[in-house]
Length: 313
Image 1 (cartoon, rainbow, N blue to C red):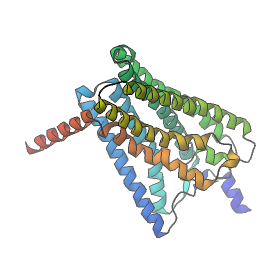
Image 2: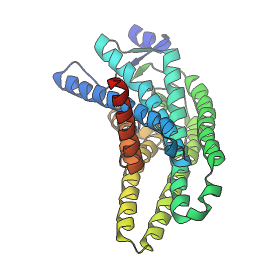
Image 3: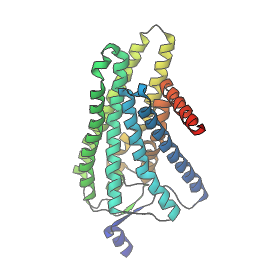
Image 4: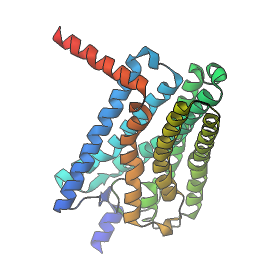
């Protein structure tokens, strides 16, 4: 009884995490750590390339640089704490740190959903309305889209973080980070009204952007099918296919986690799904959206050559 009271009224939460002390967990920990290093490196390099190369100063790459920044912040918000807890043997996270994790995670999840929709619109205009592209997707519009994604994500996150944290919880969270759906299961009071708010946010940040992305790529494919060049058709189809794979990997688990009633949540399922939109997708985004792009590869080669020449001098 005393243990339960301590968990309920302590200022700290207990994160049970992904890892135990078994040898299999050590292998999984090494995998997560490697993914974290690769993700931060890939996305940092992308930002540097886009800032350095003048020909990449276009709306598409401007939006990509913000996607890379969001991915760096998102995985850095979660994995370092997992690593620290695993190495130290501790499972605690303070109330303030837990609140910050929720706030930053919701900001970046919501912002990235909107940003991915903006990027699909950019590709739609570029391929389906190339002559109107300078008007429909100029620098001002791209800045407005990126700023809007950040601002709306922050406002939504402030509301949900403040509201979610005022509930009384049993403070043992069977998850690897502080996530609202996993915490609502532990609430000692009725959260039905708040769950409706999450559902409404899910429609705004998940279903609407996903529908717009899907519609954009359908229009792109229809336009490409009308082209006479088989090479252009294959290239566009390949690009759309890989983009949609990443979008589905991101939105699918995200929708399944945040738009289900809490009575259908299980810890193992929530943790498995969260790995996709918090750890795996940020590592795939630079590869799918950028590294497969000839302009980016050329810019990367130029940057490496320039750095090599400077070192020799």
